[in-house]
View 1 (cartoon, helix red, strand yellow):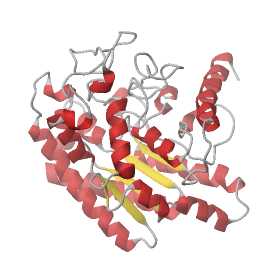
View 2 (view 1 turned 45 degrees about the horizontal axis):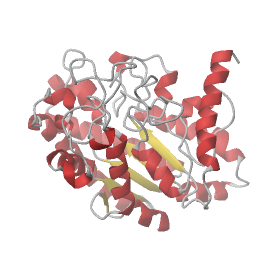
View 3 (view 1 turned 90 degrees about the vertical axis):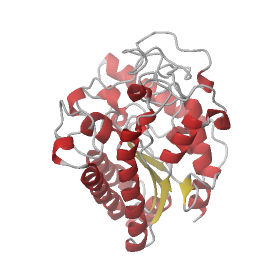
Length: 359
């Protein structure tokens, strides 16, 4: 193992170990498994040949160790949920291949720029589609977790009590449907048929997770992408035409999860209403302790509409900003998402995560 590889593995291990050592109480769930895009990516893209990386400051500025690969200034919603469960932050799956074995407390398979469709985000380089992420989880179960449990019954019990978190689909619009110069999906599909295509494809992967052993699955809607700084171009109004595109998908997703709850025995699905929360935060930021719902905190390329410029000093009041860069939210917003999903009664339904772990 070369020096750079050894150093990178040591960094991931240190970040993982520090969180483990801070845990005093028994975890509320045996593991948290995370799948999605850059909203949840904790470093997988650092190890892929892609332009979609966040392995430089000011990303990760809230971490003592600096940039981790998270596309925000600190923790993601998955990290906050892990903290609530009493678990360490799920480490990036690809970092596991630098040495050691997969922890039994969960893994993070999320990959920035990727989506539900395999081709989404390919213009930026390699990323892990949701199908590839499920493949990797299956490998984790067969090659790693099976060695930790004495019987298939024990393994099944572990998986059935673990929490699975999915947030994906943003890039199927941002880096696909709304990018006609690269992808032809907007020419071959109406908004309604594209939403149906995405929902059906995601359902296939959720069913695969169930077949592998997942039972408690939290799936987040796509947020109001028309309110992203990358689309608003410093205006104070959202591009509602874009928002309506994802509303079609979110409706399909809600229907699909209700059908799966009926069809898949002992399954428990939770829908994270990320759209309504995101839109309300934009319209009424003070309700959530924020003051700026328009401007990115970091200095970005293309006048506030893209990703952070490396090493440029960000704003001093990130905890008051909705957005960190042109596409991603701040740690402050992700804390709100996680808190309301864990304890609230309006964001994660039909039950919050606190009730899900008890079920």
